[in-house]
Length: 199
Ligand code: IMP
Image 1 (tube, rainbow, N blue to C red):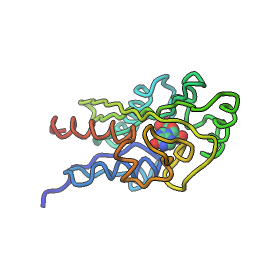
Image 2 (image 1 turned 90 degrees about the vertical axis):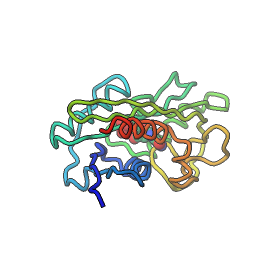
Image 3 (image 1 turned 180 degrees about the vertical axis):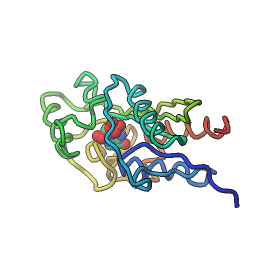
Image 4 (image 1 turned 45 degrees about the vertical axis):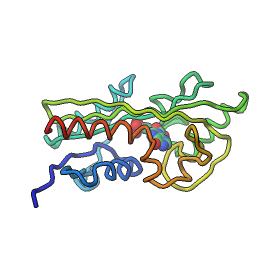
């Protein structure tokens, strides 16, 4: 058996890690997490766009380990909130806030608006190996509901219902979420670029 090619996933988010490891299953690539490398450095994401922030993460981890890296930056855009929380999705309710804090803030900000609260997840996935850079995007349209439903996933999953579905993302398992999610779309496309570019 040939040795798998290792790619580091520059994330400290275990929800993202589980989703992306599944996407690369069955390929010649092995996704290594920062936890397995024993170091999850804090990276300042001071870009204004998903693409800028995903590259900041990939480059920071490449500079430390000098090995191929993938990273993503993702967020939630809510129409009635003029696209907020957007790139600020992770800390929407403030520094050190929890996922529940963010969800409660979104639900309370939407109280004054009529349903449906149309929204979409966005994900920018990037590959960087010091020379080659590849970028892919994915989107998941849906709506925000005003209650928490389900136990799986992370982030805004308990209050997000994808278009054409009745369950929230938290009421689905990883396989179901990976059939439609913004992250799956972005990383499936990125995976094809990595494979076809022999990276
Ligand atoms: P990032 O780590 O800077 O990309 O932050 C992304 C934030 O957006 C996460 O902390 C979540 O709050 C939210 N988010 C991104 N993708 C998802 C998802 O698939 N489900 C739920 N929330 C997500």
